[in-house]
Each structure stands twice: as C-alpha cells, then as structure tokens.
Length: 131
Ligand code: MN
Image 1: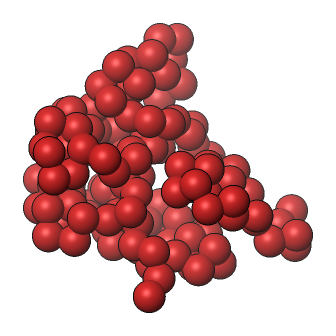
Image 2: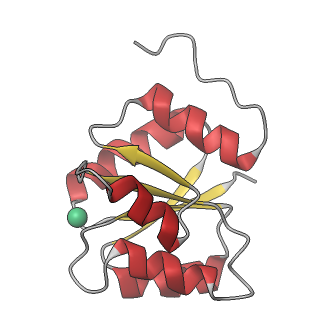
C-alpha cells in the first residue's frame, strides 16, 4: 500500500501540481482545502507526512501545525510548511509553530521528493529524469 501524505492547501492548482509530483514518487495524496478539514482528515487517516500551506481560509497553517503537534495521536507526523511567504523571520515562525521542515513556492519536484523522502526516512532518490 502506498504511503499516504496529506496536503492542506486552498489553491486547487497547487493541489494538482503537488499531486502529480508525489505521484511520480509513488505516494498517495489526500487533500484538504482548509485547516479544519485538514485536521479532520489527519485524525481519520493518520498520514505518514503532512504538507501544509500557511495562508488558509480558516485557521492558518501555523495553527493547524500547533494543533497537530498538541495531539498525542498525531504529534509524531512530520509537517512540512509549503508557502509563498518568504519574508525575513517566516522560516523561524513556522519552525517555532512545530513545522519540521519548510519549502518555499514555487516548489520543484526534486526538492519536494527529496524533502519528503528525508522526513519519511526511507532514503528516497528522486527520478533521474527530473529537470
Ligand atoms: Mn493559501
């Protein structure tokens, strides 16, 4: 069975893009369009890893992260923040909220698969065809 990754993101275009990238790495992806449904899916499926956008329509990604990290059933799940926010100090803010890693958009497939593989600790090597 494929490893399940949850992506919490309100932009459908980013969801399609990241799904394609994760698909080439053999991962299955669940998606949620806002923070609350993301938390619900996390509880229901206990994914292997969570990718979270920071700017979400309801509760923001740092709050989603904090809630997951406060939940004993979910707190072991690595969380990677995916965000367009590249302001000085943002990285620190996300890591402080409990994010294990951070990727700024636009994200390359290689970068995404390397980071996901690293946090899943499976020595994943991205496809050599990646540009
Ligand atoms: Mn967003």
